[in-house]
Image 1 (cartoon, helix red, strand yellow):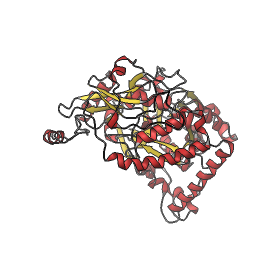
Image 2 (image 1 turned 90 degrees about the vertical axis):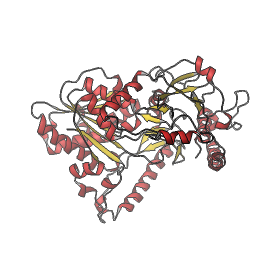
Image 3 (image 1 turned 120 degrees about the horizontal axis):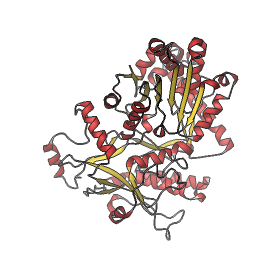
Image 4 (image 1 turned 60 degrees about the vertical axis):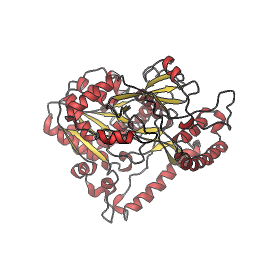
Length: 511
């Protein structure tokens, strides 16, 4: 699907209050179908600008005097607006500068990582602050009674429908952003596997000289916390007596949900004196924690903001991406050869940590690049590479404030439907209970999930270079076979969704 069309459709939907009626949502659905048909026609005629400075990505509506709810114009790269003068005059802002703003910014520019961070985490309009609903299947699945894995798929689909029907009965929402986590799907078995890993490593290393201190970042509904504490309380009461569980949660709504989960039953209320929920970004952390602790980051790294780089195909010089937001709220990408200190440091650390062995978004052969440059309409910049600068800063936090930590993290090493580029994200929103992927990260802030794959080989090297700690990377299946009672999630056919569902995920642990 052509992303400028889709992005503009959704921005028209979210911009005007009148467009939130079901009638206009139905009209939007037909427009999406029209956009799909237009893609095939426009793809044949699209060409890439050779300008090194700017590449407009998402086009906007008509001027305010001409625009209305039903009459707006789609633009393409064939007729791109020149925003060079605006780029010279617009102020540079950061995601931190925008935290206090209740409206999406206009007439500003910012680095790509700040645009992504603002889109996902702004307290007033960010995706995780306002849009996300986490699916809960209700009672745990009885996997042993299911005939096979397709039966699990069918039962999960029914529970998904029932869950969303109940939400719609209270307030209908065609743009509800509903997603699930392995903790919820495989409750309590997934959490129990994590608990076994934590208890075993705690007992073998610091027990009884130190308490079992667990930090979890991005805890969702708080289900993993409850499953871990339930298991430790039941299996090792002496360890439970010395357990402290601290959740670091950036989203106020999710922090409130975690507190509600903690008070939802007598069993969970029994954990209240063990738990502290800290409603703060990990990047605002200031206290030093010298005690040994475990740090859980389960499916967190995929939503860390990245910078975008393109490379001069002749010199291999990197250029850093900046996003310009004009007076209409439309987006344009500019690339400059001057890297900011964070991106420049990441490139230095990566090069040193990996010995210079990492992929690039252009052909290694200079001769091949020279030949491609002679083709009609050939670009002089490479495809974008998305570098995890925010992840590097997270490792800095661990090294500086949690020097005795042991990290346990799981995330996706591969994602389907990613946009064009190296280490590129999946950008998608949900409309009328269907996922709608687009092909650019420059989308209406707060209504699209932007999630990146993790290159575990490079991440492991960078983590080791910054923290000085040794690690081990394994597949999700290998970790679960080591620490889960896999017979609990096995169907009668012998298939096991806990092992097969996350084949594109890996786990890294500090050893």
